[in-house]
Image (tube, rainbow, N blue to C red; front, side, top):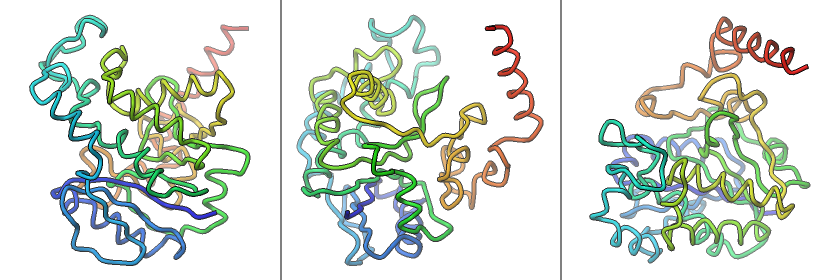
Length: 280
């Protein structure tokens, strides 16, 4: 089955991290895997494995941003009555900035339509880079045949959506629902957040509950850190330079056994065991 990687970034993002992401993809990923890149303007990298599509080819994104360009709630700048009280404490809360972060959610279904065949589509954040060979066997472990989607789940936080793998066309309706959530403004009724990870989790939980799709959580132990990437097999061959790491050479958690120091990990293990004893 054909595999595609999907990502998107701005013109500035290309220079900061996107170029590295694509170059390491071309170097380390199997030669039969191709990458779909949505951008505002064409990128200067040319390769038969690169499909560079323009954001403007997705009218739903332009329509969403036009509708909400003057909407302070859509930008996480103003309290919405549907959200928990005092959500906007310091004049801005990124969890409710759907205007800025809508791109990830809104390119998924159009990309699946572009592929239009049986395939594996892997969303990979543009600030991820590969440092070790990606093999076909490794990819099969990340989305085994008996699963429809794999992701990085966290118990106390929303899923880490730097990686999402979808089996197509089985997941097409799931991806369509996410797009429609933004088209219809339903994201603003999500109490926990209107950015893609919260919308993904909302539909994931529903599809799991109804038995519509089978999801695999790649996070081996979500007590490790907020940077759950390194609690999964992904950290063996790729690094996710989240937040302030974007311009760094690597994430510090990459060289920690559990993604955090042994001391912190031991404390979290202790707290978990203590909680388990109390529940007996």
